[in-house]
Image (cartoon, rainbow, N blue to C red):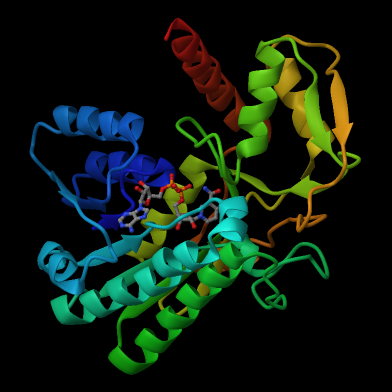
Length: 320
Ligand SMILES: NC(=O)c1ccc[n+]([C@@H]2O[C@H](COP(=O)([O-])OP(=O)(O)OC[C@H]3O[C@@H](n4cnc5c(N)ncnc54)[C@H](O)[C@@H]3O)[C@@H](O)[C@H]2O)c1
């Protein structure tokens, strides 16, 4: 079962699982109509009927979850509210879905006898980097209610592993990007740069543009998820999943400009945003050691399909 299976990462994971011949249950509130259409089109292509879609809320009670989980051997828990700035405005809502929601899904796993629980955590649990690259032993100092809520979810995984022998694996995802990505949230900067460049407007860079992020292509994240589902070596472990490379926001703008045929990128500089970290870069040695995780996508390789997808989406929006 994939909770949040109609989300950005979820849709990529579901397609990949179906292509491997795995039976998949998507459990999602299905509130985004564009994503729902994508899921419907995946279901249409699924001639062998391996996909089941359950519209449900992880907060609505364990009964519905345990029922849906009854036949599942493993769960990938992706359902969450992922907008970091929204988490500053409605922290209690984000806490309910991300922290309490994770606890309820774990309880449902115990009731249903589901063996493996894979949890999508976030690099937001680290906060400001004290050293680079950030390994899994780095201190945990989240700077937003979102980061705190993801960390609480991690701790519940640990407790359930110890108390109820659920096989939990925690993946700390860095900045995931790719076709289908949301326009808010983690990879927002890519969507915003593409949108402005397509309109021949200057991009907006907060601060000096020398801040860095670790952008990881969605197919690499899916590969890591598949590996922890099919290997026992990561049970009870926490693994970083990033590209292992840090990219400055200025270099990101240049790389996107190149793909859109712009030799020079015009930029407006705005004051740095509150609560933003300066640098981010994952140390991915542990994931390599335990599950052989090795990103297959450089930023250039991953940006190309992402930028094309975003440009087509903008064309679709302007056609109305
Ligand atoms: N995208 C990233 O860069 C990134 C980075 C780090 C961690 N993560 C984590 O990965 C996971 C997936 O992220 P994403 O980018 O695909 O997000 P997304 O917003 O695209 O997908 C989340 C999905 O969860 C569903 N959902 C939300 N609340 C729900 C509820 N109460 N019950 C059932 N379903 C619910 C939504 O409908 C949506 O389809 C999240 O847990 C997020 O914290 C993502």
